[in-house]
Image (tube, rainbow over all chains, first blue to last red; front, side, top):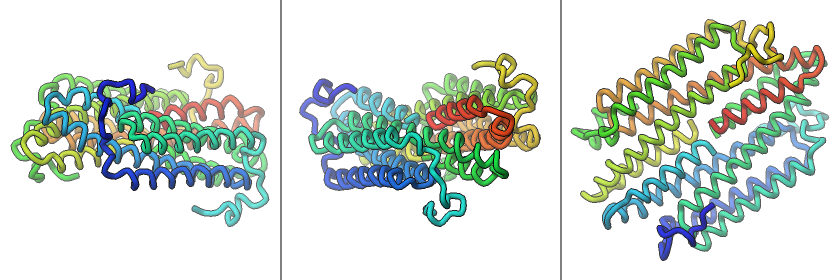
Length: 104
Length: 104
Length: 104
Length: 104
């Protein structure tokens, strides 16, 4: 992963999700709890299919967080870039992120 | 979710992943750490695209765990059922789990 | 599906992919050929796993077309809306399309 | 792709989907028609988001065909191998196919 610290595009930037940081962190804590719950199921020898079902739910929750972040990115980073000049780089980054997510 | 405790098919069953439980738990702990790492990135206002990249990685790791569990399920639950009688129910469950996972 | 004809947002609009229509159509023809190739494999009793492999390839090709269309949508529809006024509706549509695609 | 003709496992094999070949071919023809429909939408300059929605539907239909083939593979190839001896290779192939499909 390229660190945000090293990318031009990120220098001094307030991230697109800044307005919603508390809600975003709450969602991530919930996903963390879901993954911990899956580990607990394994510790208790829960039936494999039931474990897989819970993994699918955690996966879906993670993907929903990512989709929300993409909306934030478009709403703030892409729109700001469009208004201030050339949004091409921001759109390219978003596209690559979508491609990774679709294939995640 | 139907609890394993309540399903006929799971009564008294050693789960398919029993032989590999420690490794499975280690993988889940790693995913939990990845999700916690994503929360930390958000706390530090990391650039949105970099956060999404890490979410994709965590998602992929979770999906890989689920695929491994499906292999365990086929190797133990489906094969045992095939040898002892009718594997239809086990295969149906696996198929539904695959469908949920593909669409996760 | 809401027809483009019925949505305000689409009235009189040149689609975002207008500049690349020939290339887009060529990609779709290729995917159509891939799906036809899968049918031919089935007609010839090809081994199931090999058929599934080709379906995965066709699926991936379709998803890549959709990701390309999302880039066109951001580059044209979202950017134009951002410059002319309120891009919120265009971003919402894109987000919902991403969510459907991720879960496709 | 490794051709079915060249793999030991497939020699002389009736594919797992043999009993359902006509229904399978009908589903694939429908997907082919869906992809052709997407091309027609592009020819008619349909709004990008509507095109993406239809691509998601075609993708989902393709994935459903693949999941059905995996069920056939388990029901026939894996079960037969389990009863006749070592199902390991068939399960490995299925697992790899699931992994490709999940990431398709």
